[in-house]
Image 1 (tube, helix red, strand yellow):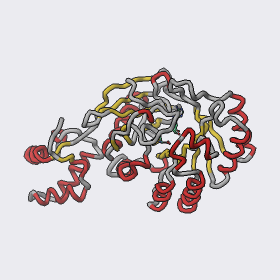
Image 2 (tube, protein in one colour; image 1 turned 120 degrees about the vertical axis):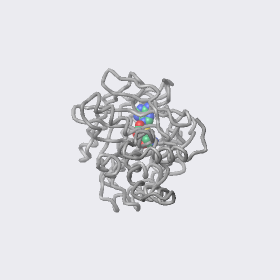
Image 3 (cartoon, protein in one colour; image 1 turned 180 degrees about the vertical axis):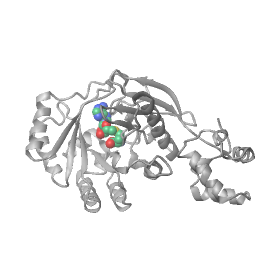
Image 4 (cartoon, helix red, strand yellow; image 1 turned 135 degrees about the horizontal axis):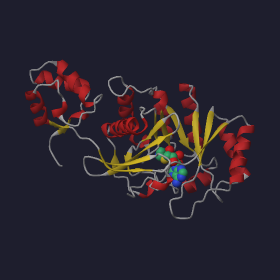
Length: 346
Ligand code: SAH
C-alpha cells in the first residue's frame, strides 16, 4: 500500500519523545510507544493497549508501522525453516531458521538481491534492488524467534548475517538493526551470539573496528590466491587480498577477536596443494578459525564440490598448522535454504 505517512520505526526514541511533546503530551508517551514498536514488535497501533484510543488514532493519522509478512514458509526434512518474507513495498527476501540439538540460529538477509557477483552464489543472479531498513532486518529476527519458540520450545540463540546481500554494503542499517537486537529495549541478545559474514570489504572492516562493534566477524575467503579469487569473486580485483589482510590485521589489533574464514573447496578451482599452502599462510596473519562449507549446487554445473580426499587434505594440513577447522554440513538443501541458494525460487 502506498501512503504519504511516515514509517514510525524510522524515528529514534528521542524523536518519538519530541513528537509527543510537540503534540502537548508527555515525553514519556514516546517511551511507551517505542517499547511497543521494538520490544513488543507491534504491527498495529490498535495493539498498544496502555495507550489511549485518541492517542492511537492520532498516531494512525500521522504514521504507518511498516512491517514484514511471511509470504510462504517451507520446512526441510532436517528441521530447517525457510521464510520468504514480503516487505512493505512488495519485494521479497528470504531468511532461514537453522536448528541444532542445542541452538537455533537465524540466518538473515541484509539486502534485496546483492550488489556483488560471486560466481557460485544464487543470490548474485538477482539484481540488487535495495538495502533493507533496520526494522526489516529486526523483523526477520523476531519472526524466527517466534518460530523457534513455537516449533522448538526455545528462544532464538544465534544470528548470522549470511542470507541475501552483502551486509557491509548496507552498513548503517545493519548496525542500527544490531543495536536494536542487542539493546534491552529490543531483544536483549548478546552481540557475542551474532556473526556478520562479509565477502571482505577492507575499508568497512576497518570502520567496524573503529566503531567498536562487539559481534563476530566471518570472511568468505574461498581462495588465498588473488587471480583465482578474482575469477570467482570479481570484486577481489578492486579489493585484493593484501588490502583484505591489512584490514583484518587492523580489526584484530583493535578488537582482539579472532576471525572466521569461510571456505568452499571446488573441483578444478582451489583443490591443489598450492591453494592449501596459500590458505594456511593467510590463516597465520591473524588469529582465526576456519569453516569449511559444503558446496550447494546452484544448477549450472560449473562449480562442483571437490573430492572428499581433498577436503580431508585441507583439514589435515590446517590442523597440522594448529588452525581450528569446522566442517559445516549444509542444512535445508531440499528447500533451497542452504548457503548461496537463496534466490526467491518459491
Ligand atoms: N555476502 C556475505 C553473506 C552472504 S553469503 C558473504 O559473502 O559472506 C553466506 C556464505 O555462503 C558466504 O560464505 C558465501 O561465500 C557462501 N556461499 C555462497 N554461495 C554458496 C554456495 N552455492 N554453496 C556454499 N556456500 C555458498
